[in-house]
Structure formats: C-alpha cells, structure tokens
Amino acid sequence: MDFILAPLLLIIQVYIWIIIISAILSILQVNPRQPAVEIIRRITEPAFSFVRQKLPFVVVGGVDLSPLVLIVGLQLITSLVTGNIFLAVIGILSSIIYAYIILIIISVVLSYVSVDPYNPIVQLINRLTEPPLKFIRQKLPFLVISGIDLSPIVLIFGLQAVIALLGRLSVGI
Image 1 (tube, rainbow, N blue to C red):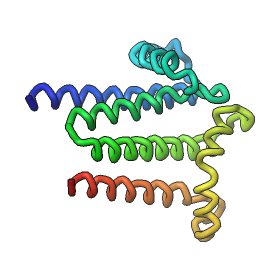
Image 2 (image 1 turned 120 degrees about the vertical axis):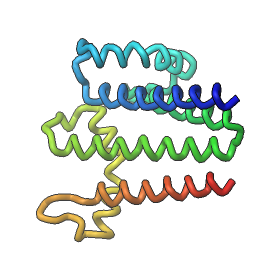
Image 3 (image 1 turned 180 degrees about the vertical axis):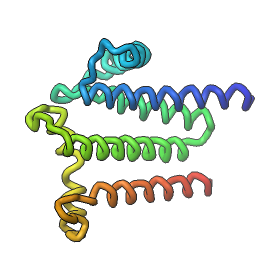
C-alpha cells in the first residue's frame, strides 16, 4: 500500500508548491505570456476556478484567496490519507505558517523595490505582516541597525520554531 500512497503524497506536495509559486507570480504580476508562467497557470487555474465556483467568498476585496484555501484543503487531504485527524490539523497549521512566512518574505522584497503603495495587494500584504513586525520592533528596538530592519528575520525564526514544535507534537502522536 505504501508504494501507492507515497507517490500520491509526493504529487500532492509538489502541487502545493506549484500553487505557492503561482500565487507568488500572481502577486508580483509577472508577464503571463512567459512559457513557464503560462504552464504554471494552466496547471493551477482549473483548481482555482473550482474553489472560486464552490466558495465564492474566497475573493475578498479583489484579492483571490483560493490558493490558500486549496493549500489548506490539500494538506488536510494528505493528512487524512495518512490516517490521523490530529496530524491533519497540525499539517494545516504548518501550511498556514509557511504561507505566512512566504508573505513576510514577499513583504521584505516589496520594501526594497519601488511598488505602488496604493496597490490593493501591497496594502493587503502590509496589513497582514506589519502588526507582528511592529510589535517586534517595539519590544526589540535594537533590531533596526543603521536603517536595516531585522525584525522579519526574528519573526521568521519564531515561526520556524512554532513549526518545529508542531513537528515534535506530530512525532509524539
């Protein structure tokens, strides 16, 4: 049975990463006519359309959250196939934390390039990432060195620690 289950789980994990790449390309508004971007879009768009059709509330303020819903759903399916609902919850939490880490990295990249601050996606990213970063800057003011803000690194390390803790919990089960 493992010879069927292992490749299936690998395919699901690879598809999750393709979804993440697709979401990042969408946020960065890369030219959709590039061959690699077009292939990724063709692979992911049917699933995104299905999620948007079944759950119309995933588009909030012009921002499409269907990739996040799809990642959480696939992670849940992966965990259910392996047979433990607690592992499913841990997997979903880990996926959400990984998605948030990617959002922090995108926020850092956007802070170094010239983007339109009134773009709704940029505003959404800032609204999602700025509160914890601001909290870290207030509690640890020494993290801003010569105008370079190291609070995203601390936040990512903290989130990685939470993921490690969740991993230890899943191993203990």
